Length: 125
Image 1 (tube, rainbow, N blue to C red):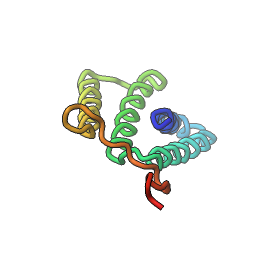
Image 2 (image 1 turned 60 degrees about the vertical axis):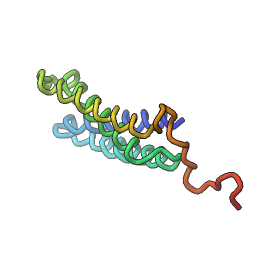
Image 3 (image 1 turned 30 degrees about the vertical axis):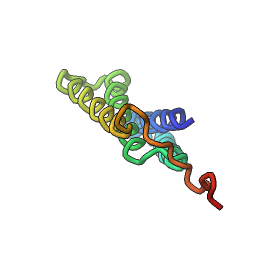
Image 4 (image 1 turned 90 degrees about the vertical axis):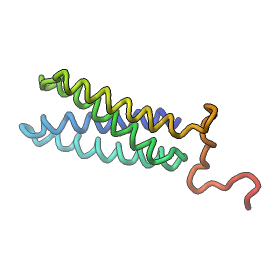
């Protein structure tokens, strides 16, 4: 569920970002820009509410957003995608992987699942 919501947040952000260029020539696109960004932040908040650590959720969201926006801008808008840019994308993805792996406890066990915001733990109450 968390990954699906995070994926949807990334998709909304990328669509909104790619629509910005179209909005420069046709202001009607700003509706999609605003809606996409609002949906992206709403979905990101839902991921956080479900207990995903902020550093992980935001890191994944930002890295995938940058990566997919750069690739999408090349595909949709014909923007340049240089070898140096591709190397940067690889480094960004590697950095997020380090953040994700850093949330695991020694021995490979994942960090204890966090309780969703607003829910009581077992034995509480």
